[in-house]
Image 1 (cartoon, rainbow, N blue to C red):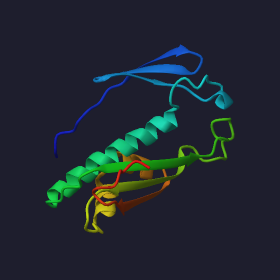
Image 2: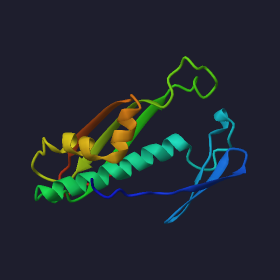
Image 3: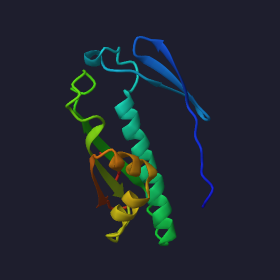
Image 4: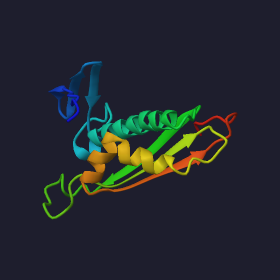
Length: 152
């Protein structure tokens, strides 16, 4: 069995729904939008989950491409997810967690990489967590001209 990596986050309620989270690299804040009882001062936990997924997808894509001898050049990720808010509001018949999650990775390489999306999805730890929750996951790769700006 390989050695496992462990991670720790310490969280504290600040005011209302605003919560601080101390990690090995610094402090993050989460909040809820006003419609969910928060003040909207920071990303909500679902946005943080999606940001974690996006970061993990980008890092995993770079790792997988490097193993294939491919330099991805620039890479961006746009991720979206949806939840059924009825569960948070107390309806136990509604699903908990993400219902669906989609990601589009844009890479600036000239040649198509048909293997990249499947390899990234199967190896990204956050994809594994989201998939295990029952969410429908879709990951696609778009190719951009290396001279094109990746953020649109």
